[in-house]
Length: 368
Image 1 (cartoon, one colour):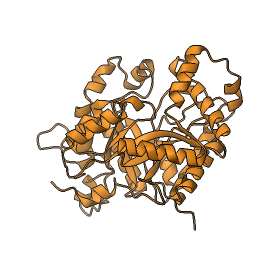
Image 2 (tube, helix red, strand yellow):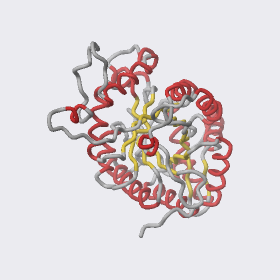
Image 3 (cartoon, one colour):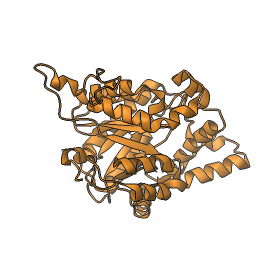
Image 4 (cartoon, one colour):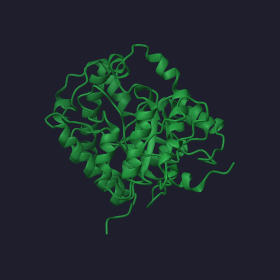
């Protein structure tokens, strides 16, 4: 079955300048020590506008909860804010954690976003909680968390039915409609946008890779925190891919931690601070992203130092030329169709500068 060109065009990006594939942005809306969530959101607006002006393809926001240093608990709200400050760049979730929400609510939220920014919205879905077990239980009003993950294919099917407004006759939800949505076109005098947010599956292992392949959906892999599984997951996705009305061939992007600075030493200082933040998160002490000065003064234990070295081995960082070389090598090794870059640092200015330097080194378009 051939893919619908309109649907595929909402997925596939175009590489600009000398970039081997389209470049995109993943934003965790990080909050540094001494900064506020308001500061972080202002940075997100600044990065999204820079990304749009420099030819980055899409800008995604990731759902996290109960983490002081990550102010992205409500992706739909943030995306509405970014839609008001941009005109062309694709905006989406990277992702919404489906088991945390009723499928109807997600369909309504993203139908509303699609109405705000027609033809620019992506709906990326994950099955992890995006937080610890206790917080997930509070979100879902149950402590039977495995059921949510196990039911992911059924929840995905239900969400897709709401997005397309095509529950079959006799289904208990046949007369329930996600609004804004297709039902408006079938109402007397109704006119509805031809766009529907494309659904992406996100993953850090093989489960979503296989499901995305079987369903013929685009796939996004979290290389930035599961690098050892990247190539096996992408291979599985490609092996199991079946052409669909959405895509006639696999399309996979990978999330990559990347930070460019004007000199190598400064890049190392910045990623050390981000790594210390991860040490604290992984040991149950989540907090604001520390300053580079705090990280340099931190008395790392041998175990912490081992974690930092391992973590930073998968962060592409350094001068712009070094980052370009690292990204080019990663794309060749994985065959990724798109690279989605996430710059984690204490300062919003540092993050903004990183995306600017990467755009420069690849010769991406400059604003008129």
